[in-house]
Image (cartoon, rainbow, N blue to C red; front, side, top):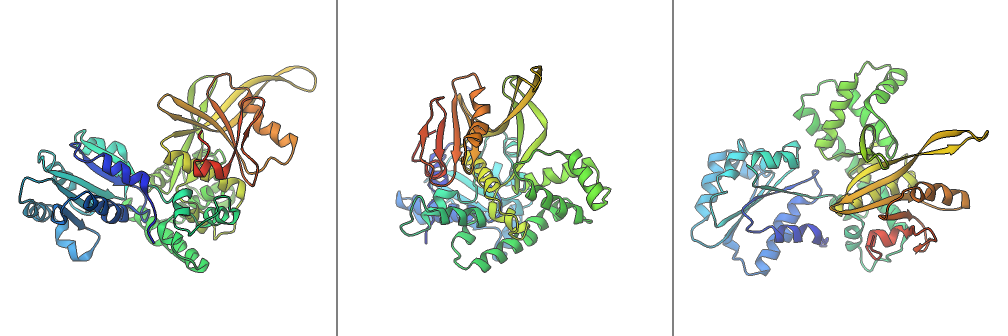
Length: 418
């Protein structure tokens, strides 16, 4: 079964021969190696690139352990560049090589070597790529499968199949999970992966010895996706409920470590009228819903929160920066006195000159619920697109206020442009 990853494949193809080191980054087991060694190499061969001009090294393979030495790796690659034709050098898990920055920078001045590498840890955040490769590094972020890619793994799927959407929100988009039919295997894999891979990476990288606070913090964040929080609030929870003496600074560090490992993503608040960012409190969303649910033993699968996380992830995959909107206005209290009020917009999404305001609503069962979701959007006095994404079989339409009521299936499939 071949899962389509056309978005990332096209990015790789478009980046060829641009004089940069292409760094494919993202969480472990999200499909970076398959993208590079299968989909990309097949595309190159399909365009007529000779097989011997594609140099591949899987550095995670024990058989290639000697190539983790930087000089050995240089000699290995150099020995395979034997003519003036273009060579594509594909290296998987490059962070396992000592002084890998020097190795990769050594090929920046070789005109017929085009280098693509994958990496899974904090070394491969965009800011590090820019720094380490002297302004000649391009970061390509790969996420777990989104819903459209998940659907591509199904035979003749119904685009509006609620059960498939619920399956995706339950088990997420890691390729191994999507291609496994047995639900018990999915659960066991996700639970084991979280502990044996992601947590172990963080503990080893940052030399965390007393890790029970870290694990409990992950559970706290997993239980509160879509809720505003900050290190001070979490610290109070730990003190009152866990009788823990963990500090705000440690909590902040742990949250940063989780973001560096691509487990969670942070959405900061944005004052829409004041046009400024408010650093705290913020919201946190999981990069993969299956991992989030596995962390909570699949006991907290609230569809409203999972759909909000799903929409956040999809927007980021589409290239938007995503913030949480805050809207301040003055209303009248029961006595007719003016009072300051605040409303929230789930997502303020920016991409270049484009902006979207989006509310996530699993259902709109009543007039009161509709007014609640529409109220903040109606108070935004600009001409950017305003959207409410809804679940179920609610049809897509535009109301009298110009707000697009968008069915989640139409949104995920891209059938309706926003």
